[in-house]
Image 1 (cartoon, helix red, strand yellow):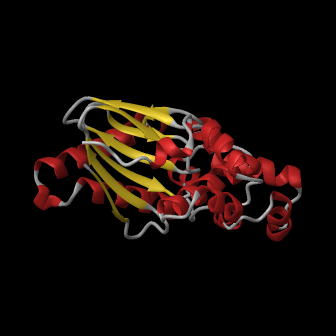
Image 2 (cartoon, rainbow, N blue to C red):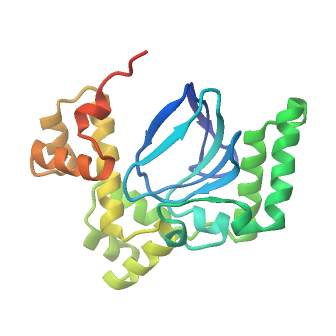
Length: 237
């Protein structure tokens, strides 16, 4: 069981919740950072992944998450994204006592739903942290949007007024990796969306900027760990 819904007050963020049936879930890289609550592990921060993360859960494990759009996480968590790359860390490692206060609020919401949802707690915490930080770096949203639309790294750098090296340094801080890696990840996400909408893989490759279908397959395998056919296969009961 998995669902997503909007996060009011945090532009571009998505709330999600799940109850695990047990086993392994393949979480694809997306350039995002997540604030997570787990019934098993408490509050965690999921950093930006370069390749698919395999999450293992027991039956009945519950998850609530706030997925922050690319470039927003550092303003919320107070650390450069590259320090969280490919990591899952307890929120307390970043916020100390403040994390304990958030934990108390989440647990109170879970115990007494009338006091507000746990997802609402995560949203309000992120919103308040963003306001205190003066908002996310606006360059992050501009870079991510241009790369998601298929712009080249060079064109993106020119549009945001940064040189190649400056863009690379800024990207490490905002996304956890350089703009070329982010572009590859966002192109894969765009291609998979087209494929899920019913486009044949050869057409998907052409529309997404891959040289051919074989190039698409290699890229997806490198980033996701499995070929597109595996990701697009219907779930079995």
